[in-house]
Image 1 (cartoon, helix red, strand yellow):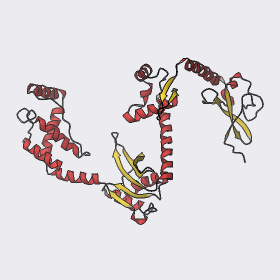
Image 2: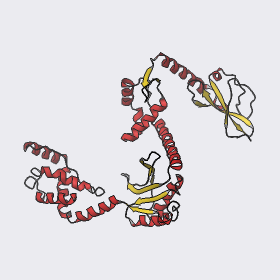
Image 3: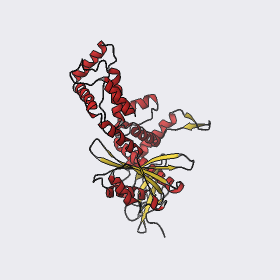
Image 4: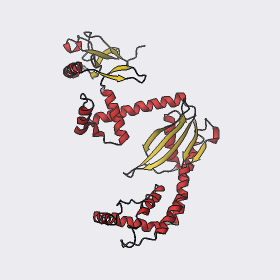
Length: 381
C-alpha cells in the first residue's frame, strides 16, 4: 500500500500540479535549477516543495505560491556560488594529522552560535548585533552573515530536540541503570522550576551527568505534585524499569513523593528503591543550626555592611579612608540564606579590614574582632 504522507520527487520537466490535478507541465525555466517534490493525497500527486540543485535548500512550491521566490533564491544562490569560486580555499587539519579543504557552513555557524549564547548566558539577539558581525567578518570569516533572533530561536529548538533525541537513544540502548537527583529552584522572577538529573555509567565506564528536565512548577510543592512531575520525566525517557535510586532533600513532601514513586518504578530493584537523602542539604541544616547561636554577632556585621552599602557617598568615603590608612579598599557583600558558605565568605572578607572597619570610624556598634575569629572558626568547623 502506498504511503499517502511520504513525499516523492520528480525530475525537471516532469508533470507538475497547481491544484488537485496534474493538468500541465512545469513550463517555467526556474525548474531547470529545482527538483519538485510531491505528496500523494487521495491517490493524486500534489506538488508541495522544491529542492535547489546548488545548495539543496527546500522551499515551498505550492501552486498558489508562484515561482517568484524560487527565482529570487536562484539569483542569490548563483551569486553566492560565484563569490565562493573567487575565494581561495582554506586547509584544515583532521584529528589524525591529515589535511582537508575547509568550507564555510552556515549550519555549523548557527550551531556554534547557539553553544556560545547558552554557555555564556548571552541574549538571543547577540548574533544579529553589528559589533559581533563586524568582529567575525574582520577577524575570522568575511562570509559570515548575521543571524536574527528568530533564526537563533529556531536553532535553539532544533539543537534541543537533536540533543534530547540523542540522549534518549543513549539511555535506552546502552544504559542499564540510572540514578536520579531532583530539586526545586526559585528564579529571580519568583517562579519555581523543578529539575531532574540523571547519573549513569556509560559504555566506556565513565560517570555521566545529564539534565533531563528543568520545568516550571506552578502548583504547591506537595508530594503528589512532585511525584507526578518526576514520573512524567521518567516515562518520557523510557526509564521506568531502570531506576535504582532517587536523591531528594529532607523535606517531608519529598518523603511523600517517594511513597508515590516506589511502587511505580520498582522494576529494577523491586520494593527497595533507594531514597537517597541529599548530604549537602543535611550539612546545610547542621551549619544553619550552629549559626543560630551566633545570630546576634552576625547581625551586627550585616547591619554595618548594609549601612556602608546604602549609598555611593558612604562607599566613596570608606574608599578614601582606606587609601589614607594605606589599606586596599574593597566592597563587602552580605551573605545569602540559600548558600550556607556565604556567611563564612562574608566574615573572611571582613577579617583583613578589622583596622579600618571598626567602631572608632563608624557609628554602627560592631563587636570585637575576637568574635569574628571565633565565628570564623565555628563556621569552618
